[in-house]
Image (cartoon, rainbow, N blue to C red; front, side):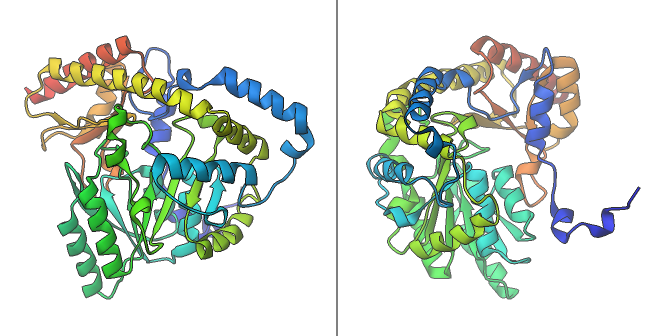
Amino acid sequence: MIDFAPLYSRDVACMRYSPIRRMAKLAMQPGIIGFAAGTPSATTFPAEEIRRIAGEILEKDAQGALQYGLTLGFAGLIDALNSFNKTRRGIDCTAEEVCIVSGSQQALDLIGRLFLDPGDVVLIELPSYIGGISAFRNLQAELVGVRQASDGIDIEDLVARIEACRVRGRNPKLLYVIPNFQNPSGITMSVEKRRALLGVAARYQLLIVEDDPYGEVCFDESLMPSLRPIKSMDTEGRVLYLSTFSKILAAGLRVGWIVAPRPVIEKLDLVKQSTDLCGSMLDQRIVAECLRQGVVDRHLPKIREFYRRKCRVMLESLEKAVLPGVQWTRPEGGLFLWITLPARLDSEALLSESIESARVAYVPGHPFYVDDAGRNTLRVAFSKESEDNIRAGIDRLAQVFRRHLE
């Protein structure tokens, strides 16, 4: 057998298996209550309308829908998307400022390939999305963590981290943030901090990578003005905005998008050509029709109420458990919340006990940190399980924690 190890690239040595994907497999075992995978519930997908629209597209233009398309995406989707961006998110952009991608994870990879050389510094929230960490780490970037407060990233700590990098001759290139119902913490960044970030980025010549997959999954429509993307306030073209239809339409369609200045999109066109040539034209046409026919707008209120109820049940169950010294976030949207145990406990060490004795799976918090912290934290998703399973799962999990708290 050939020894492949000497042949692998240096990038491979930086790659780590996602604990979320590993836990997702485990959570599919019979009898496991799965709080690990932050996937949207399939019951929220408008399957019948998607089936009808797909049929109409194939009946009218099967050859076009099943053929290759442009690398940057289907023009009909880009037009519909620009209207969606403007009316719902306050982002006014042209067709030349949009790139359609196969989910926002591909967007992170493409942006990393476009801007990062090995050793370049990326500033990242503590904690942050594992997929973002992986995308940048796989390109051999140096990841520098920045603390979060209850209202989002700590601006003073951000400036201190930038200055510390500059002292050692390193100028950070990118700042990666998830302002709305952050994955994994559930925290929402305040409007004041969004504006402050733009000031910091201008001062230090940073690009902001704004990942916004959850902004529309708010539990109260009245919150929407406070969830305006940083991109909507950007006058310099300093923000690269990413989002996806995975949480508000259907995850399996794998359609997301990037909004960025035209020169960046032109370069992304080149980067993407070497990755997949183009995305699925059928999927993109389906999403375009779902936007044009109002499917997304009709389903958003149902999705919001669905996850609002699930989150409320999980929060009520945690309150009822009475766990001294244990804290958790209270998100106003998204799919999950963040639990912090007393510092002496290790959520990864408790995981096997949780699975074997309580039959409950969660994701330990440590992999969401880039500074080796967070061992006493964990992420629990309320999106997948029924309300009864959420109650039962939190009760069982509380029993595991209680044994170690005592």
